[in-house]
Length: 238
Picture 1 (cartoon, rainbow, N blue to C red):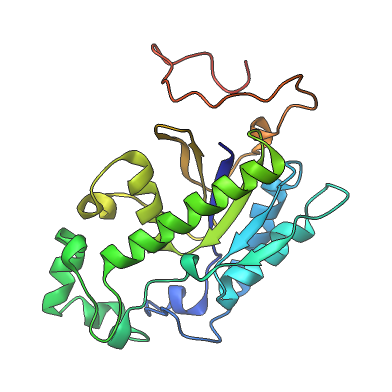
Picture 2: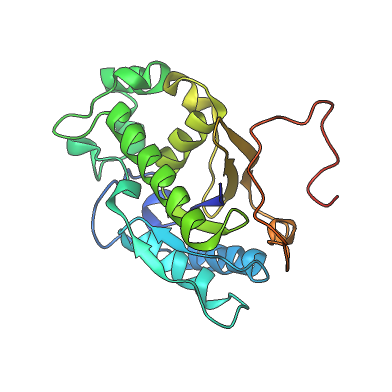
């Protein structure tokens, strides 16, 4: 299958002020967030992206705009919005300070047993995970069908959403997803195969990703192997 790069949006004022923005409209990247998005774009400049899919919220669209603008390929990738990558609907928690929410009884459930957490007037974390994983797997299959098994594409979303996708790729229960860190403008890489995904990297904020660049020529399509390299293998540059 194709390879997906999971990008979290850059920092926003809500992030900096400890506010749970959720699906609030009008939340934009702050100055640092714009710089982070540009730095992420520079990391990906030499890697031709076959497609870009984003959460419809402004902070993700703004991050994607900087990434696509810096692409060095002659024809920039098309950008698609998908509600499957939307931030979790935090319901009545939306717009509140995290330090206040930490006093709520539900907070402990969110931390220790997120698969049972459902936000008042909002979405459950299990439902968020299911629709996000489904969206990424759907787009991965579509990108491979349209661009081949060596294609690399980008999905831009939100912290909890990406953590849920990574938990699924790692084969761990959603109740363990709080062990995963996904920083603003970080990149994580997952390669799906017929039997299981491989997590190539997680939460990286520096370094060129040129090693993911598809080969210039290939006589025949590569069949995606679901076998792990016993002993660790020779790495991606071999």
